[in-house]
Length: 241
Image (cartoon, rainbow, N blue to C red; front, side, top):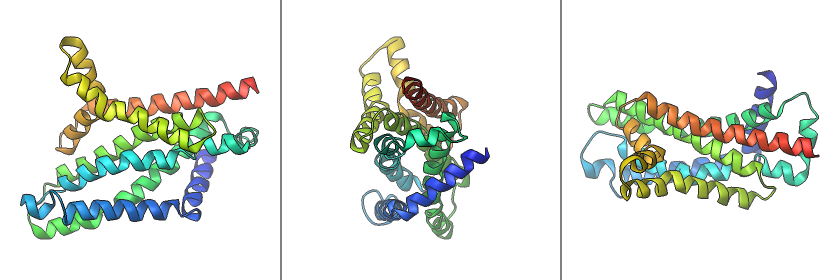
């Protein structure tokens, strides 16, 4: 755990040293704040004391922001050759993948913490469903774990950050849109399979305040599969070299 935490802190500091963290926070808070309080289906327009507009905006913004965070993680190490140097240290491939993933997740968590004033403002406007708000944030964290797993896998297979970003987005599109569309156009078992694979169905369930074990397992399985495959790619490269 010590090696993982050291690597996590190093990557988190790198985010802030390279301004990546500041750019993410400004854009994320700017977009979410604008569409939650000012434009579109904002809180004042729908006339309900709910953070659902924010969760809907974050649902899409995180889809683009997380691949932008993860694309550098392993692809840059592959490009510069520092991945081999890192692998000579007293740290395993799995610890490398987990440490870098935790740094991404912590940055997302920091971004979400900065949106807590939205919740505090809501409590001044009326009665808030605290459970639904808590579930909404939990849904965003779980969904972020899935996207980080996908992003780490995409970053592990290439030394080009742009390629890693696009591959991560492409895989994400399947879970975010295509499986949902296929579910609507299919029947029987195939419809059930595509319905289960769709991220939107699981996120909407949690964001409404319903925590189902199958939804939690779904997000964690995607994250775990992505991280295991990323570690497999690193291990395979290590054996070949």
